[in-house]
Each structure stands twice: as C-alpha cells, then as structure tokens.
Length: 225
Image 1 (cartoon, rainbow, N blue to C red):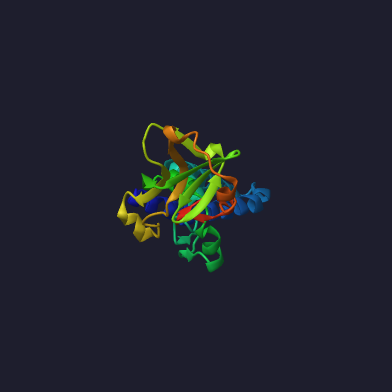
Image 2 (cartoon, rainbow, N blue to C red):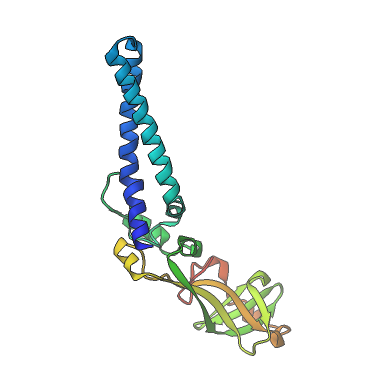
C-alpha cells in the first residue's frame, strides 16, 4: 500500500496535470491552426495536435483507472487521519490549527475504516450500569453519570457491564512517513448491559444529576457521536 499510495499521488497531483496541460496546449494549437488547414504546415500541426490530445486523453484515462480505488480513498483524508493535505504541483500542506481543532473531537471512525490503512480493535471498558429511569438508561463512567436512549444499549448474557468502542492502528507503519496518524482515539460504539439487570430502576433524585450523553463530545476520553 505504501508504494501504491506514492504512485497514486505522483499521478494524481503531478503527472495527470502535466498531461492535461499538454492536451490543452495541443487543443489551442489545433483550434488556432484549423483555419489554415489548406496549408501543408497547417495539416501537420492539426494532425499532431489531434494525436497529442488523443494520446494524452488515453494515457490519463488508463492511469486514472489504475489508481481509481486509491484516489477514491482521498475523501477520507482529513486532520484526524493525516497531518497534511496535497494540491496539484504543491509540496505537502500541513493542516491549519483551526482545521485540526475542528476535527480533533470529530466522530469519524469511517475515515479510518474506509481508508483501508488501519486495523480495527474492539475495546471493552467495564463500567457500572445505574439503571433505567423513564425512557433513558444511566451509566457511571470515570466517576460521572450519563444517560442515553435504548438505541445505544444492548442487553447481553454477560454478567458485567461494558461500554464498547473501536480503536484503529496503522497496518503498515511506513504509512506514517506519509503523514498518516499512527492510531486513532477510541470511538464509542454502544453499551453492553447484562440481561439480568434489564429491570433495574433508578430513582428520580439519582437521575437528576446525570448528564445527557449526546451533549458531550468526549465521555471518559472516548469520542462520542
């Protein structure tokens, strides 16, 4: 993947644009000469220009197809996954402080998943299930109480309560040389509660002090959706 990514960026940010520029120059020559087509030199220029345009177009299309899968992954490159971006004919451009800050707490596990550069690891962190009050389920994480809806809770046959997360690490550490993050933060997935505790209730007084999980970007150092 390391060599493949380097080859893709060489094509996508440099070689492809050279071919496009050559084709544009040839097209300008073709248009400006076509009115003098009756002359021998005009026929030669028109013929060569047309040939150059066809060769450039075919070469660009063929190489784009070769790198299409990797090019498609560029949409998942952002300040969470890489330290810099690229533009045509430019050196690597580090992301600005404001861009990094904006993405720092972003819930973007798909960026790591879809890049195809990372191995995912399921993380289970044992926590305390406090019970249900109304339509919400309450948990204690790192000494703080939070509540969430049933869509974030799954009842299991296990005898312990966990919060489940996913963590990503580079599968090829060479990719770090290209600015890719060595690993992600942990992204929250759901809560796993013993089925034996399904009917556990929480008092109104206890529930009143809890924070709504959806209002927090980070809970217990995990990134929340």
